Structures are given as structure tokens and as C-alpha cells.
Length: 520
Image (cartoon, rainbow, N blue to C red; front, side):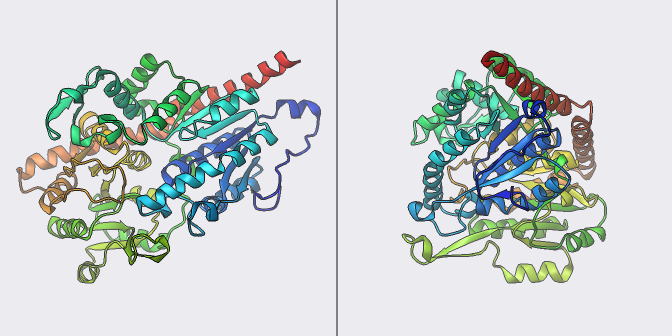
């Protein structure tokens, strides 16, 4: 293995001290999907495996490897058996510019489709790598269903990584079985999902297109579900105490074996690459009162129109609460048919707004990546305005921060219902429309709705008596603080996720030993 943990040549397992040691060594290869919400938790799981005596290889492309190389280097220095295997990204064949290897780098649907094509082109190279190394187990993102057939060919288990929680899986499963939305005429009419442990309400407009009708992705999702059923099991970045009724419900009604390993971000220790120094962020927060600051981040994929950004900015000013706002980029496209002519600019170009909040020290703007885990854990943070991505929800829960929910696409509307209707640790801004691409415009959410949701979570409101709001906020914060304590206990020795991790590694070792006996 080359210094630094990145292998650009063929990977070779180190010679062991004895043949017995070699027989006991378990090699697991990880194949994460090229999107930050999928990749980073899977890398954390790979690191957990390595910390528990498993030899680990993470298969990625060069620019994706740069996102986490620094923590892998530290793991290697500490003596863990972990490496990164680099594959060349097919830029020329896919028509993507150099460096565009992740969904976070494809801010238009057209570029995203090119990325999907590039990932498809990589499949034979992935397969050759797995056949050459012949690991004892494959852990792949569930979006790589072909790894099931490959694992069967190699006679090894395939574990799927699901980037969501059990609640989402249960909601999806019951909607598929009972089809309650088919009896609803209006897109905005509320219906209840049958057969769940709680009364969960949705509207048709909040459902993914693929649920309501056949789409270009329908065949692919059927393939994903079949691959999940044929896998050795599914790895979940969740913990039992967060959604116990839905863990039990999923296991009882699907028969799919699962292991809770989360929240994996608690193992990460806040490692991240940021565009603003941790010191300046935390210093600004140090001067604020406890629970007084709203943290705002919509993940790495979502994009808003300038009109929507103006509504958000106005709502933040009117709410009266200090805030930290992480802003991403939009595209200024000179030629819509030429990706190379697209120029990126920052979401928020309102210099007057930024001047006002800077002069009054009302807010802090962060362009690009932010140390989200560290910020959420700061005692001055009192609320989190989030897109309801599963990783962000887990980080908010782990930090004990109540949420303002603004789902946009994917399974985010389902996640929102867990926060607002089941756990009751958040308030919705009222976005009602699901969209297939995070970069597409949604109907405008007006500033008053945003302000009311922010004030309901932060502790003031114009629509209710101050006393009632205080009671509601105190109770919301009590619930999320309790979940935060449970999250930390789950990953400690003897905790629910720690026990599941130990059981999972035992299962993988047992599978290898059984195969060795059968083939002896």
C-alpha cells in the first residue's frame, strides 16, 4: 500500500505473521454512492469496521477520495487496516468536466443524468476490482443492486447500506401495500397511512412521483427492492431508541435482516473540511446567549430561486433571532445547452442584506461547507432549519437541537413526519410540494410561514400567547435532549448500536468460517 492510504496500484493484502492469522483476517470492501449524504456515513461505517479488527478497502474515484482522505490517513497511522482504492472517472465518455464526480457537483438535472451514466460506465471496473480482490464481504450502497449477483458469484455476503431510517422504510412499504393515496382526489387533501404504529398524515403533493405513477425510474426501484430482499442484510445509520416501534415493525413485516449502527457521526468526532475557520464560527457563537441562535443549512444538493431566498432572508430579519446561514451555489447559465458555459455564483447575492446583518451582528453567513456537527453541539444553538436529510436529522438529534423542517425531495417529506408528528421535536415551514430534482423550483413558501415556524421553535410567536409558546418550546427541547442522551448511549460499549455492530461483525466472521469448512 502506498503512503497516505490511497492505493493507485493493485491492492495486496499484507503478509501475515502466520497462516492462522491470514485465515482469521476478514477483508470487507465498501462501495459508496457518489453523493455526500450516502458517501460520508458509509465511510464512517467502514472506519468502524477497521476499528474492530476488519481489513477494509473503500472503492472510490479520485476527487471523492479527497473528501475523507485525511481521516483515513489518521486511521492508518493509528494502526488500523484500512485503505482507499482509486478508480479513474470516465470524464470523456460521460461528457462531464474534470472534478465533477459527485451529485453535489452537478447542479442541474442534465448534469446529474450524465453523472448517473458515468457511474454506470464504472460498473465493469468495480466488478473486476471485486473479483481480483475476492473480499469476504461486500458492503455497497443500495443504489448498486448489481453487487448482489456479484456477491453470489463470489460466494460472499452482500450488505446493503440504506441512507435513511426505519420510519421512512415503513412509510414507503405501507404506502406500496395499501395505496391510500389512490383514493384521494386532491393533491392537497390529507390522508392517513394505514398499518403504522402512529397516525401519520401526508398529502399526495408530498409523495414522490414514482409512488403516484410509473416513471423512468420505476424499473430501477423495483430492481433495488429485489436486491435488498436478496441481500445478506441492510446496514442502518440509526439507533433503536430513536424509532423503536418502526425498527420492530420493519423487521416483523419485511423479514429483512437489519443492523442499527448509528448515529455514525458520533464516531466521526466532527471531522470535516470547512470554508470558514472553526475558530471564527465558534467565537461568534461564544458571544451569544444559550439556545438563542438558529442554524440554517439545506444540505449540499438543494437550490432555491432568488425569490425564495429573499423570503427566507426577510423572515430571518423579522423573527428577531440571531442565525448562522450556510449558503450554497446557483448557476448562471449563459447557454442552457452547454454545461461548460455555466458559471457558479453564490445563492445569496443580496449585499444589502448581508451588510445589515454583519453591521448589527445579527447573523453569520458561511459560503460552502460548515462544521455542522460542531456548530449544532454549541450551547448557543437553539434551533436547526433543515431540509430533513437523514444525516442532518441524526446530527440535530444527537446534538439535542429542535428543528424547523423544510423537506424538498427524496424521502425528506417522510423524514419530516417523523420529526413533527411522531417525535414532536420540530415544526414545519409548510412546504407541500415534492420535486424530483433538488435544483428545481418549488412553489414559494412565504416569509410569514417561515417566520412563524422559526419563532415556534426558537421561543416566540405572534399567533399564540407567549406563555403557551414557552411551554411548547420547553417540552420540545426536553424531548430532543432526551433523544440526544439516548443517541450517545447507543454508541457506547453495551449500547444498542454497539451491540448490533458486534453482532454484525460476528455474523461476517461466521459466514467466512462456514464457507471455509464447506470448501475444505
